Length: 344
Image 1 (cartoon, rainbow, N blue to C red):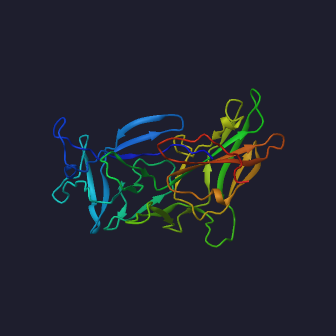
Image 2: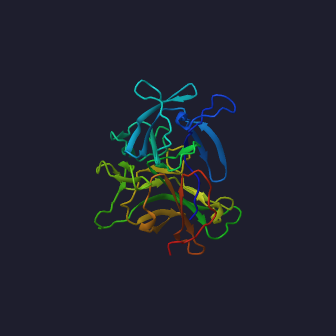
Image 3: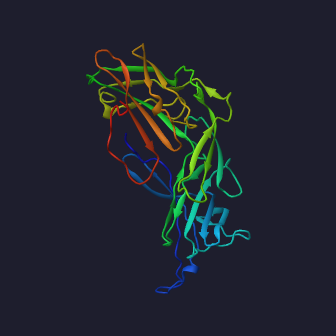
């Protein structure tokens, strides 16, 4: 399994404001200031930061001797002309409190998100798409601060959907001019009678995010099918051709693209914690082929991409699942280890 970098981070910067050079500033005079930054990182390179350039919402709690206090009750942070501000008549400037034993921050951005008054529960409607929408709502991981040092606090915002792709390669090297034609590609849940397992692809879902106000240090994320009648029989992909230069070894495995999606090869879709085994169906040079994807590798999680790599064997030309790359969209580094057939 290879962990790759592939998602957006919005950085909440807590700036220490100095009145002049070498001027001592009392801790109680340090306000919480926001400066969101987006970073897009691919498997091979890191891009620089860019401004979010949109509004977002932040919730903030502090724990003091009197108990937990809601110091940023769903503060709206407004973007205008390159700057971000939350100070309004009903949203006063918030300062760090040295007596607090911890702070908890989280946030969300985009339309369609519903939040409880305490900000601890978010509900986000999501749907199957052919391309990841730039207006897709985002939610952040919980950021717990137990030692106030006034340094940058990063809120990492996550996509409330999974991404799924399929790849193919030939086990045997292909000669100049030799081609393998892969057509009619689709993956779908296997026919099954397991209680609680789905038999179709969910087209819609309702993601719920719960942030703990104490104790636990991570949010929990779950999904429910919000419209049982909105389903698809399968996820289909465009035809492709393997050649000597594209697909004749695992390092050259070829993505199957999503139909009508500008060459995109990922399906963004609701999570699949109730998925059974899936079946790949396809034709190889006109002949039917199938391969099974085990259930334990179909548990799609929010903000993760799943690449299912299929190998076309030598003489028999059979097709089998060779590897699964589960890659969180996470900025901060990647691991190079790959374990082929790691479920066996």
